[in-house]
Image 1: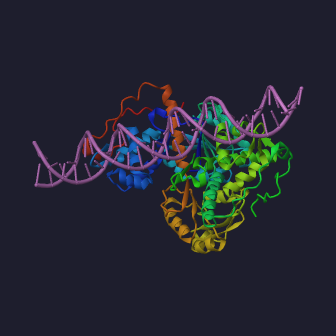
Image 2: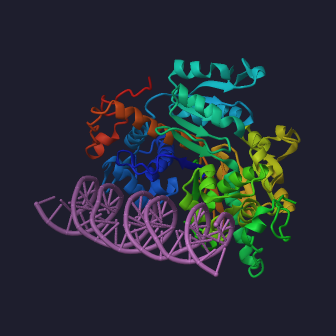
Image 3: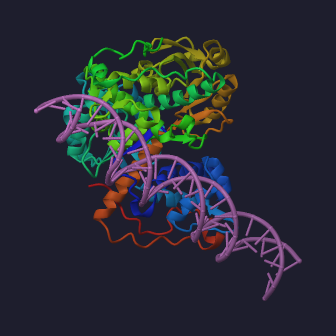
Length: 257
Length: 257
DNA sequence: CCATCTTTGTGCACGCGTTCACAAAGACAT
DNA sequence: ATGTCTTTGTGAACGCGTGCACAAAGATGG
């Protein structure tokens, strides 16, 4: 999971647990694939396998949406696709703006997954005047000055931030002030937003670090035994107060070799 | 969170809860920022605010690593940076390969966050022969045929998949067969991997869909009242079989103003 | 109409994660 | 040395999420 929910502490929105909501898109994808293959019905077991989850969990998830299955048969694929789409709000059009058209922003603009499911890239915004007018993914980039007008004119409520970390908070505030209430943040920063605004974070670096942790643990299991001696902790405020790199001499260079 | 852990069901690796591990990179980032400003010590309250979490949670998280704080003072910034880096395995060099050099793959290759913390892009791999040799982010792209050799020669254990969905599973299998044991998957597919291999998934489309859900809910709260009539569920397999989109016409247009 | 078989929907128990609230520990002043 | 003040570290309670296991519901065949 490259994502982290911020704010809205597990608000069981309308009775649907947050964890379930997070899985609905997964089910939807699997169902769409089945639909394209014209499969009429699917059992919880099969669908669960396709989505990579436990079948009991899937059934419980669906039970929050209502009783849409038929015992002894399974779930009607088309019907379920519609129900989940509706529940997720994908039966309507969501205009989205992407702010920060660097490598990542451009990649996002070109990403087919956006347009495929109710999301429409309404505008691309960048602070660099040299970018203005230049088309990316067939859409001309507009300057940050136009941000408020773009949000307002297009009724945008979802914004994607792909700027450098330094600019993210400021962009965020302008987006929110202009009326955006949901933000997908790719910048490696913690955004602070007022209540009522949802922020989801995608952080590539964090994902890699989590993988590294597990990777190290795997490697450590084989080499078990050493690494048991922890470096001495700073004893007292005296040691802590001096601004040296490490309070003790044994701190190895933290930078990668 | 745009991320979802796959496999390894909450393995409390070496006593450190998975949830804590996922937050360590967040703390590390905040601490690094303090370090650059030469701040010597920080209290749990301050650091928690910077990382966007609860201070009690932060203290409990740190307690899993050991008692690195000083009561009445706080935590030594440099020391904590080192401890967390070590815990996450960032004191060593992690060669990484990126497979699939499209828009996203190129963006990842250029992403500074990779190199900054122990991760080194060892190779870029793409199936398109036309890409071979072409430098991206200063690194020449190599053809998929070389995959096994690259993994082996560089001792790569972490792979990033940025291919189209259709190619992901196959690439994944080749990576695993060649010795990769951690995978960061950007392709919108569920990867199936043998035990012992960690997969983390970053799915832009899913994140947006989750935001859309909450966005719809917010919009619905204002219009509260209608939408109470659930569409008739398919009665028996007969009704379910017809492939119509919506069984009812009452779906409200919740378009943002 | 009855029996059997399949598959859903869910009650229940368990475990992880979060949060509160406070005792213990240390800094610092007198 | 003693007292006060700050901040950590953690015991305990609570709530959410997960998975088991089974009863209920419907399909299907005779």
